[in-house]
Length: 255
Image (cartoon, rainbow, N blue to C red; front, side, top):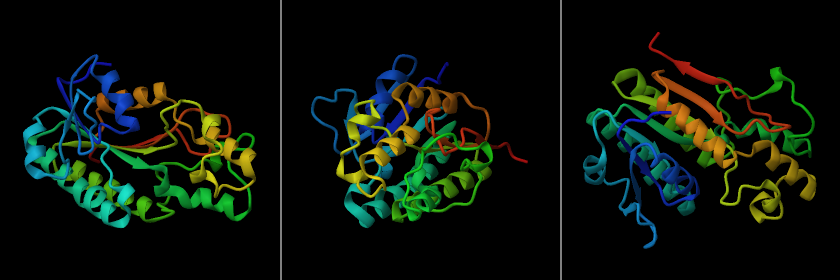
């Protein structure tokens, strides 16, 4: 799909940024920012996306922003600095600059309480086919499963505020599981998934259900960059067997 002339990606050196930057660069002028950019990442500027002057230098009227920067690796302090205050700053500055749309990287953990219901029963989600009425939808209640999900819930709320009160549109993507190697089975033994019940079989089932394939990530971001709705919220996940998140898009157009 056609893009505007300029796209700014914050946190561009991470896994998702490394997928999106080359894909989007085929059709648009893309600038990547990352405070931890490696020396060989030639298309990424080493800069702090929580710096007001940096944002003002790289935001453009009519352009797009994909906000991936996160401080989750530094715990609560990083979440407050980057995901809460930094996201508010970016949205404020994007609106001030006249950006057309900001695509916010939210997380499925905003609604992680629904998945925790499975865990409390000692089972991993993703078994069989989930009835449509049982899928977790983007308009269902916010149920964060930790401080990361709670901070991202703030980002979604502030994004809605910006969409309702300024000329800048906002899309929020509750991203599923994305990794450098596009194969859920390759990660089943990783320790970060050890809390999932039912051992390796449970982890494999859950990862296959929550997986976001690279090509679907690019497609979903393309759809958001080309959307006309003032505000959009969706789970960013592939149409997987056992998927327990809805593919519906919650949208608002000013009424």
